Amino acid sequence: MTKQFWNLIKISPVVVAATFFAANSALAAEVNEQVTNVAQLETQDSNNIGQVTSVSQFSDVQPTDWAFQALQSLVERYGCIAGYPNSTYRGNRALTRYEFAAGLNACLDRVNELIATATADLVSKQDLATLQRLQEEYSAELATLRGRVDGLEARTSELEANQFSTTTKLVGEAIFNISDAFGGDRAVPAGNPNTKLNSNTTFSDRVRLNLYSSFTGKDRLQIRLQAGNILSNTGAGTTGTGTNMTRLGYDVGAPNDNSVIIDKINYAFNFSDALRIKVDVSNGELYENVEVFNPDFRSSGTGALSRYGRFSPIYRQGQNGAGLTVTFNPNEAISVTGAYLAQSSSVTNAGVTTNFGANNPNNNNGLFNGDSTIFGQLSFKPNKAFNIGLTYARTYLAGNSTNNLFQSTGSAFANNPFTSTNASNTRIESDNYGVEATFQLSSKLALSGWGGYTTASTLTGAARDAEIWYYGATLALRDFGKEGNVLGIIFGQPPQVTGGNVKTGSTLDSGTSYHLEGLYKYKVSDNIQVTPGLLVIFNPENNNNNDTEYVGTLRTTFTF
Image (cartoon, rainbow, N blue to C red; front, side, top):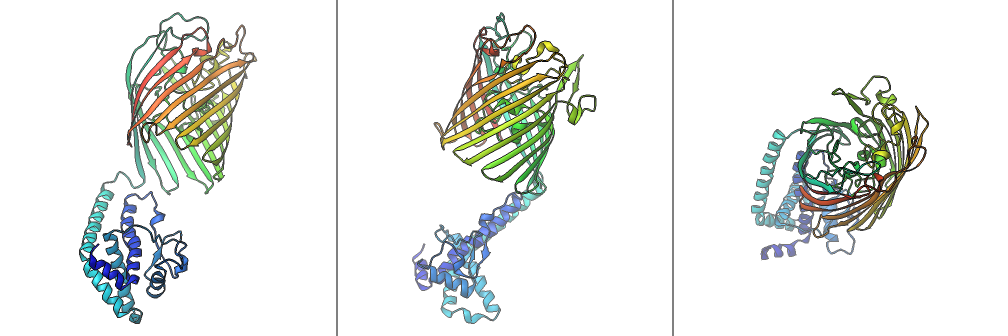
């Protein structure tokens, strides 16, 4: 600053202290008001200011501070000081010339107010002279500041006139994927394979557009549109890998011809500060409603490349369902979640697809008679370093379509161990138990894992039962090579039938499959991520006779 400015400081430290404070308030208040008009769904409490009547109200101002007397005079004599909501003054905050000018102007307005209300005796002649000289010194900055505010008001008006919606935000994601599966022979559930795996490089996509609407500021309506053509690499007939263990975490199922569909509708709101309720109308998924304890790899677009590597299969229960999820958070360390989902499933006969979800009034369908899951989870988060969850799900499969205990995650036998008992109409119930945990060893290193146990039994036909085990672990090295990048390693055992009376003349799985995945999430920018990786499945379909299979993938994700 100029020499003249420093001379002014010597003349009146009271005035200088006033301008230092007011710069924190006047400029921030005026500009933040404009910003809030643009982003109406956001609050900026940290920048709100309020008048104080005593310097003792500032928790960070002590009587030993060099500006204490100046602040005390300004507060109690002129009423020229305001504070932040957390009772701080923030006297060490950096100050620009523009802010100083804004603060000076605010203090002048206060002095003029005092004079106008016949309290001029509170203002000394020396202070008035000093303020006048400061006003002249910073007249150019004040004029510039007014111009900037006027310009901001014009831009704000333009944004408000052309905004998409006052209540709705559009969030999009697009995935470009190149992948190829290769190995020896195509996997078979039992016996010896005899068909060469058909290796073929594919280039495909998935696009999602989410419409998020809020009507109270504490609720959210989600409507998601999806289109894509990423096929499951398991193949049909004699093509593909022959096993769901090689599936990618973001294949689209049906339709897969880039037709646009509305595939998800739900509404969530706070019943109280501690109680959150979510109503799923279409395509509800437990893993989107609760904590899955695998933060670096849970997302289909930016997480693990494989289906199994995203989270424990227990969260696949009730997939594509409709129902209610209630989460209670009495404090930051404990969370309790309960859910009921009526699972949607379908079967195609003679080219006609029939839905067996909550919207179907036919016999053995609907919200309570068809496939359904009752779910509960208790989460403990004592600190950032260690989180653990205990999970239970009870699932009923009404036998309207081919039964699928883990929604095609793992081997075909584990998903339906009762295939010879009349697969298409045998009613099944299962009890699923899981434990999940995350260890944040440092800000750069995280370990996550899960283990699960399932018991399943038939309710119709021959009395059968099965015991199924699975586990998984993930390692995330954050900021590896560059800030925002993540190097990941995932290892585990997909669901395997280990005991029970499964079917006549059948033996249990002849081997154990192992899942190994390596990937590197490279952050090109805040909106682009490139993820190369390799998936290796040892003994696919829990059959030791099968050859090891590999899936190489390059996924590019755009978010906007």
